Every structure is written in structure tokens, then in C-alpha cells.
Image 1 (tube, rainbow, N blue to C red):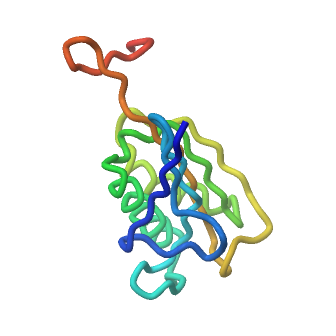
Image 2: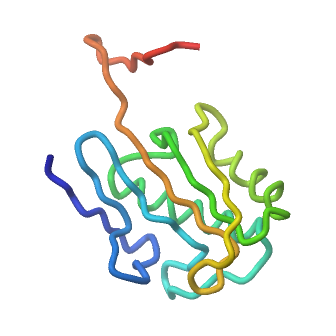
Length: 141
């Protein structure tokens, strides 16, 4: 299956030898985003609320580069350097995923690149369409 490298100037450049995202088939694998300002590549200073907002804005830019939105996200992994930040991160996260929330793991780690307090990676999937063009969930709620 062919792979397409996804890159956008609306999100920070990769800080190592990796891509912002890779699309293959109906899936998009987004590398972890930390709270870097896209224009400067500098770490956003601020509390976990500010940093979560920047991380999710960066992730949204990568999704848009592949014509996707947060509604396409099926799995995220959140890395926090302090699980004490979980509630504040979760409050912001909920604003970006108001419905059809993806599966998620949250892990406390010792450190993240550039001294970030958090990182979020995601997997997104194109919707499966039925014969009439509408989304047909495998197991409707």
C-alpha cells in the first residue's frame, strides 16, 4: 500500500528525522505534537491549559493537511510529564472532541522533547461510506 508524507507549515516542523504524519490507505498516522509555535518552532510558555490548546491546534493543522478533522480521529495517546495535569488537559481536550470521542491512552513520562509538559499523537481514519453515501457505523449506538 503506498504511503504519502503529510507536511504543513501550519504545524511545527519535525524536530528530528520523522514526518508530521503519514497517510496510507484510509489511515493517517500523526506524529506526536508538542506545544511548539508553528511560526517560530519555540516552546509555548504557559500552563497546561495553554499548552494543550497549542498541541491540539498543531494536531488540527496536520489533520487539515490531509483533508481531515478531529471527527476523523479514532485513537490518541497523551503523554504528560505530570499526571497532576490530567484534569486540566482533559478539560481542553474535551473541547476538541465534543462527540464521537476517540479511544485514548494517557501515560506519564519522565521527559519530553524541548522540555514540553505534554505531547499528543493520533491516528485518524476516513469514514466508510454506504451505498447511499452516508456513514454506516459498524455498531450504531
